Amino acid sequence: DARVTQTPRHKVTEMGQEVTMRCQPILGHNTVFWYRQTMMQGLELLAYFRNRAPLDDSGMPKDRFSAEMPDATLATLKIQPSEPRDSAVYFCASGIQGIETQYFGPGTRLLVL
Amino acid sequence: DQQVKQNSPSLSVQEGRISILNCDYTNSMFDYFLWYKKYPAEGPTFLISISSIKDKNEDGRFTVFLNKSAKHLSLHIVPSQPGDSAVYFCAAGGFGNEKLTFGTGTRLTIIP
Image (cartoon, rainbow over the protein chains, first blue to last red):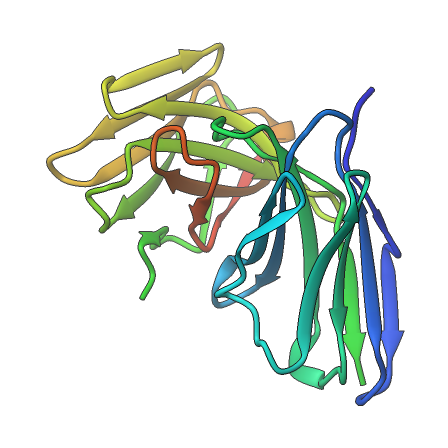
C-alpha cells in the first residue's frame, strides 16, 4: 500500500555535523510538509512544498536549516551545523493540493550530542 | 502564539467508557479541523475531520463535535478500547488550503 517513507529512521550525530533527512512522498501527491515534534510545541511546521516549489518555510531556522525537492519523488531536510537543541523527531507528510488530509511518514529520530 | 491548543497533556479512561478529548483554537479563519492519532515510533495517522459547515461528524466509535462560537472542538470515543491508547493531535486549516496547524497533543491511556 502507498506510504510516505523516511530515511534514516534514527540518527545520532555530534554537534556541528551536517544532517540530511530524506522523504519519499506518496506517488501522485504534490504537496510535501516537514514537521518537527517537540514536547512543548507539538507538531511544528518547518516547511512545505507544492509541486516541488517551496511555499512556506517560515517555521525553519534559516541560518542552519534548508529544505529542497530535487524531484517529485524526493524531499530533503538538511541541518548544517547541527546543535543539541535540534534533537527531536522530524516527520515528513504528503498530500494533494487543495485537500486538507496529510499522510505522515514514520519519522526520523535525531539526537545531536 | 499557539493557535491550536490542547490543554490536557494526558487523559486516562476505563475501558468501555467514553473518552473525550478537547481542542480550542483562536484563529477564526480556520474552517476545517482534523484529528490524528499517533502510536509510539510511528507517524500520525488521520482519524476523522469536520468542516465548519457542520457541527458533528461521526465515524464508527469516533465522533467529532464543533462549536464555532466557542472555537472549540472535541473528539468522543465510545466505547474506549485498549487499542485507542495513543497520542491524539488536533489540527486546523483553511478550507481548500493544505497547510495545517497542529496542537500539542493529548496522551490517552485506556485502562483495562
